[in-house]
Length: 348
Image (cartoon, rainbow, N blue to C red; front, side, top):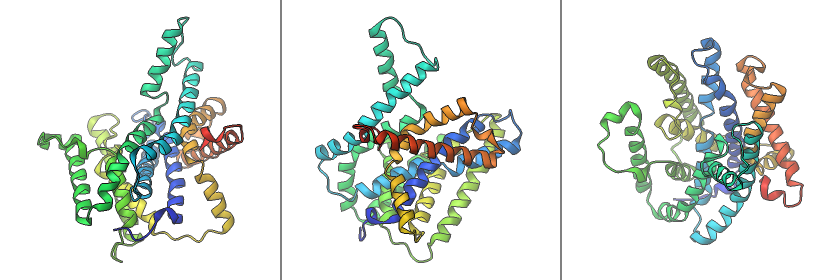
């Protein structure tokens, strides 16, 4: 199936940065979303809108991983040694930073018993010392699967890849709360989860669609799905008399459509960047993992210390502006860390 190399294409680098910014927007707008019923709907709507439009961030990250790694013939041990080595060290460093920050903010307390304190830290590391670190745990699990999954997708026909994706989507649909009564109780859990995004990213990266499925077509699909998510969240929240986030679930039909269409818009958009802009883009792209790990800390600090959050201005402006400030400061932080001895181990 492959006839090109997405790792050599600029659109992958563009998407990586956009996806990272979308992740920051999700976490910037989430506190506003949680205010459902406590603030005016006209304000809450913008939290709903920004949270919905940015939900493709993590799925697109996984799709990029699938596009870049599933096409390579990789032996499990060398692959895991290389890939896990790149993420475990910065992950542990930032996990301990968040443990220290949680202790400083009195989210939990240490005792005079050293062993009890060790167990507290280990508990934090086991379940994630910050809300956003779940992504790293998920990514580690996918890395164990990639060498085997890669052999499947490289040798599978297009119809077999589509079969896998359709079963994945079907399992996903019957797992949704509103369709749970139709669940046949057949054990198909091995088709569920983020692994489908790996295969979807691989398939979409290499698939040459007919001319009618152009950027405009996928753009319309993106906007239509976005409207469904925004309106669906609003009306299900009214129905349940409280915030409903079922439309935001990352492994759900709506987010798959949103993420897949965003991925294709990125793939089909040809931008002629100047060499200087490309240099800046590639510079930022080299620090996206560090930005991901650090941005939750920066977002909390600029809120606590500088009162910079979604309410800085009207949420229409306040959310993307706060996210941009957080993004830039996170980039600056990890760049400065990279200049320290051994700093690249914890910043990229």
